[in-house]
Length: 343
Image (cartoon, rainbow, N blue to C red; front, side):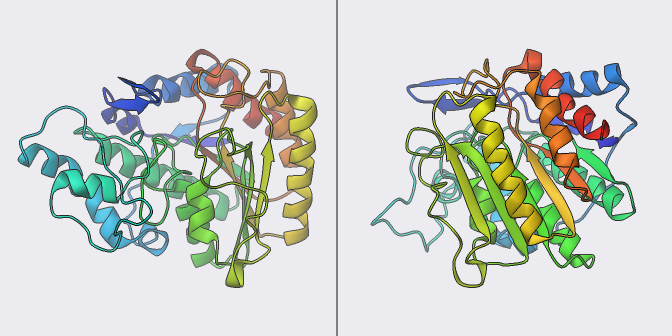
């Protein structure tokens, strides 16, 4: 299996985030991607190639163009306003506040286009985001050209980014852009299977009223876990999208015995949809020692996930999402991929 990976991801580094009650160094850091890259090389998964440059034409079909312009301009505007260090929001247009007028101040803009203080900005953030986007599309093109599977080692991740908001370390929704790209190449139906510990709220929001992209999320119940305000089982899509969004929330402490049952349910939903291509939003923060998660999967479980995904016998694009126990992230993420290859 080929991996698409850009060293430019490292430009997004040194930023901080708001974690419950304190400002801390971001959990989403460059070492995550480097551990995965090193593991790919150690096991001989296959070639690692840098992405080709892609324009934002496809991204503009799933994201508000004004939002993408904001992502590009936010840090220069932050500096121009006399600020320094990490750019992060501190006020949001919540219920009963207006969300139809974009502020002119950079402080207001950041809050307008964010839903938390986890997707923060430094000087190299936009270039890293572009390289992550390019990695997803370059890996998608490998699958489109006949490769049975490819891995987009994306950093920053993407599944919390919605049509016009950032959050959860995510800026451009790489899986959503790839899904749209496959449709533009002639696919009739695309399934996105999100196995990250946290609900892929951005992916759900983007496709919630569409029937050409099925979204299946396996995740921690939002009653107790981030992102808290989306991901309940009764969210099934609206309008043309009714019946094409599926959430499989699970309890705190879920281990392989419970998680694998949800995976089987997800597979049944994907099989019944009969997609032309499968995109796996690959988060491995389901791991028992992940610092910000509460599931109990162990490293030996991840190759099983890959082998089970291979049973679907679909062209498959793996897109990297979460996972923050950095010493094990390479073992776990690449375990899924080698399990898939063992098919």
